[in-house]
Every structure is written in structure tokens, then in C-alpha cells.
Length: 114
Image 1 (cartoon, helix red, strand yellow):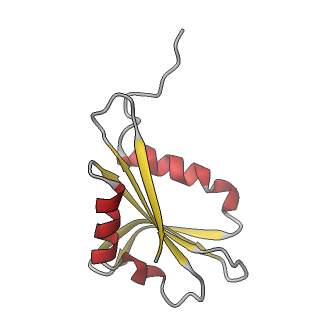
Image 2 (tube, rainbow, N blue to C red):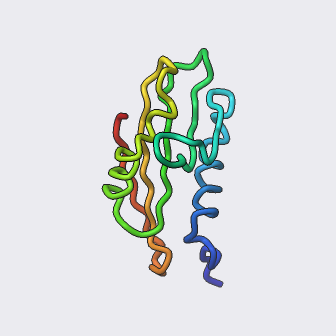
């Protein structure tokens, strides 16, 4: 029997669950926020380092369609980095895109310093 991902894999909620699971082991280091108001929009997910942790803040945009460069441009034009300014830590902008109609389920990512 061939194993494959569920049919609903290529959607934002499934991708959000994957990101949450990936950072689950870092829950002692980060505070997770979702749909955080910032600039002129809402950050899909943000991971804010706890006070004692020198890790960078993560501002994550999940996008159906388009390229990671387009998602990054949206993050910059809407000033999503403002959601984590003043924390005394570096910040990384993370753009993850996917094509919900592509059966091979490719995902693309771009990471830049804020």
C-alpha cells in the first residue's frame, strides 16, 4: 500500500499545523502568536523569544500561490516587522508559499533579516 499525504495537505491550516509542530520543542524559548496585527495587515504567525533567550523573533507569512519573493514583498510593504520591533532581538521574516492545486505539493521558503 502506498502512503501519501491527506488530500487537505495543501492548505493554510495544514501548513500552519506543520509550523506549530516544528516549533513545539522550542516552546520553552518562544511565545507563539497568531494573526498578530502589524503595520497594515496581520502576521500569520510570530514566534517571540522569551526574555532570557537570544534567539531571533520569527515573523511568518503563509501564502497560497505566488512566489516567496512576492510574499516577502507583502511582508515588507505592510511593515510586518513592526510587530516585533523593540524587543531587543533580531528578527527574521519567513515567507512560505505553496500551490494548493499542484498534486506534487511543493512548498517554497524565503528567509530574510527584518
